Length: 154
Ligand SMILES: [Zn+2]
Image (cartoon, rainbow, N blue to C red; front, side, top):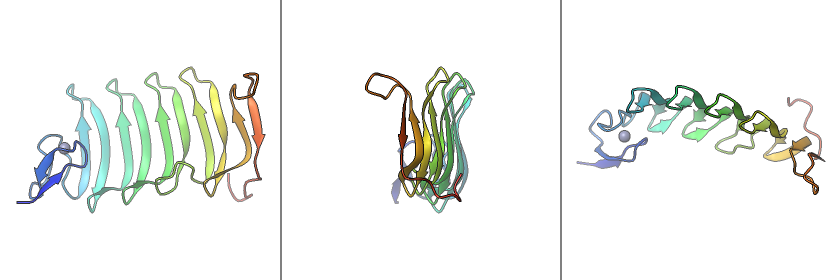
């Protein structure tokens, strides 16, 4: 009997079992959900050919959305959003094959909702104007200019 590791909880399971007896994650294909002991949804996604594929979501035990992203054959790919437990947006950007510096807009906030950093990426490099809160030599907000972003990009 072949023993494999569960994708979600790392428990050793038989590859012949359709799902992990510990957390319910499928051993090969299909949608999966994990729950907190309270029954509250913790994560939700889909496995295709043994790797995460498509929409993936994570929740706090309070029910607040924590993270929402997309997977492309096992790597994060496409729009990504994360939230603090108080519901405040933490970050919003794009993944490109597992790289969080995907083309497009990037924004990051602190728990109080203040903008911490904002800018754009192109080909994994910063482009255009970037804002960073309190990053100047005197602790003041800082704007840095990078080579312009391609016009076709938001
Ligand atoms: Zn498991």
